[in-house]
Image 1 (cartoon, rainbow, N blue to C red):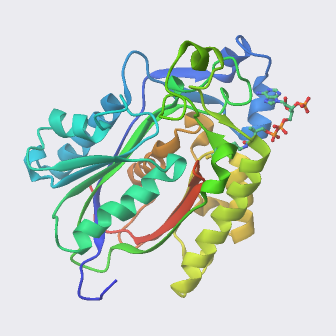
Image 2 (cartoon, rainbow, N blue to C red; image 1 turned 135 degrees about the vertical axis):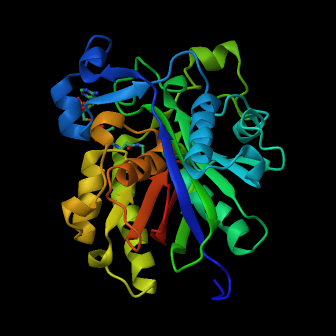
Length: 333
Ligand code: COA
C-alpha cells in the first residue's frame, strides 16, 4: 500500500445471534451422538438457530446496528458487502436486500462467496475502496444461516454448525489504525473436501438431488481439520513475518471458529498465549462467514480491543480458501 493512502479502519462492529439455543443434549435426541463426544472433539456445547427467517434478516440487523453505533444513516453508506454461503436466494444478492432495508440509497451492493474465509476476503475487498479514496463508508458483513444447509440426520456435520452474523463499518483512518496488510489464498483442487453440491448449475434442484441430500453441506472432516491447522498457522506467521512482527506482538488473535482443537493447535503452532486468542465456539459453534466478525464484536464489547492494539484475523474454509488480515485497532463504536 502506498504510504500516502489512508488505511481502512473499523469504526464500528456489531453482531446478531438468534435467540433459540440448540444444545448438544437436544442433538443427542435426534442422532447417535453424545454431549461428551461433541465437547471433546469440537469444544462445542451449543449453537444458535434462526427460525423462520433468512440470512438477510441477520445481516440487516447487523447493518442497522452498525449505523446506530456510528450515529449515521443508510444514505451515508457507499458499498455493502455480504459474505455468505447461505444467501436468501440464488439471485438477487443478500447484500441488495440489506441495501434496501437500511435505505442505503446511494450504495451499491454485492455478495462474496469464500465460505468460512468469507469475512476476511470481504474485509480486504471492502478496504480497497477506502484506501483508493473511492468510497467513504463501506459495510462488510459475514452472515450464515447454516441450519438451512445442514443435514439434521448427519451426525458428522449437524453438531458443528450454527446461525449468526457479524459485521464492521470501514472508514478512512486519520491515524495509523486500520488494515496494515493481508494475505489471501485459494486452492480449488480441494472442492470435494468441503462443499454443498446441489442447487447450482452443476446439480440444479430436482427430486433426485433432494433424495440424494445434495443440498446439504458435506465434508471430509479429518482432511479439513489438518488443512485448517496447517494453513491457518502458516498464513498467519507468513503475514506477521513480512511485516517484521511476531505472534508475541499480537494483542488479540481472532481465528475462524470451526473446532476448539483447530484453534488450540493453531495457537500452539504459533506459540500465542491462550489469553490472547479469541474463542467463543463453545456457545456459537461454526457460523461460517459469521465467526470472525461475531468474535471481533464480542471481543470489542468485552473491552478486549483498545486503540493501538495489534489484531490478526485468520480463517480457512470451503474453496478451499484461507487468509489472514493484520490490523491496528482504532477508535470504534
Ligand atoms: N458423535 C459420535 N461419533 C461420531 C460423530 C458424532 N457426532 N461424528 C463422527 N463420529 C464417529 C465417526 O463415525 C467415526 O467412527 P468410526 O471410527 O467408527 O468410523 C469416529 O467418530 C471418528 O470420526 P472422525 O471423523 O475421524 O472424527 P474426528 O476426530 O476427525 O472428528 C470432526 C470429526 C468433524 C469433529 C473433525 O474432523 C473436524 O472438526 N473437522 C473439521 C471440520 C470443520 O471444521 N469444517 C469446517 C471447516 S471451515
